[in-house]
Length: 113
Length: 111
Image (tube, rainbow over all chains, first blue to last red; front, top):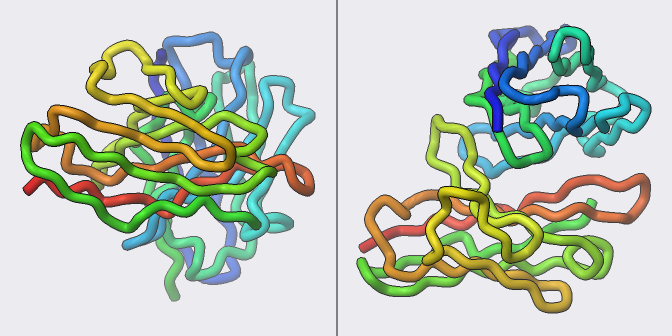
């Protein structure tokens, strides 16, 4: 099934940018669609973005469209989420997931001044 | 964007059977399959059911899923204390450019 390890979270000021990374191992990364899903404090799971195994297909939740960009580097077995113009509503644990079947432990993003 | 509706909470005693419902629409559950996840705070969500009623290896057969029309259900029989967790349904929605939807989550309490 493989393993996913997220990184890049932290405290960021409103309006600034942050890039999350997800390093994959134990499976052929280039063969699978990948996703970012988040959980805000006290809230449920919320899908953020998806990218197909061929990176031409990308999908975004309305809440992040135009601000976040999902990308992947199959040569590095890595998934990314570029977060621009963040707001307090983006404070959450961010999980990466392979085909929404295998998930990482998450990385915490806190947007605060 | 559309929503998948789950009850906020359900409860049961050890050994009982509980069900969790997930109500959607024609653009999501009505046309696409449903996944179910178990989530404990601070941990990675765990896939319990995929393609409406399929169990990944390692998920016990006391866990089952079903789908009818625009609704789906998760059933857990022989309830155990370790089943206490949050449960989420998820389905792809075909409207607009397409997106994934998660239900609001259901807190299962084992009394």
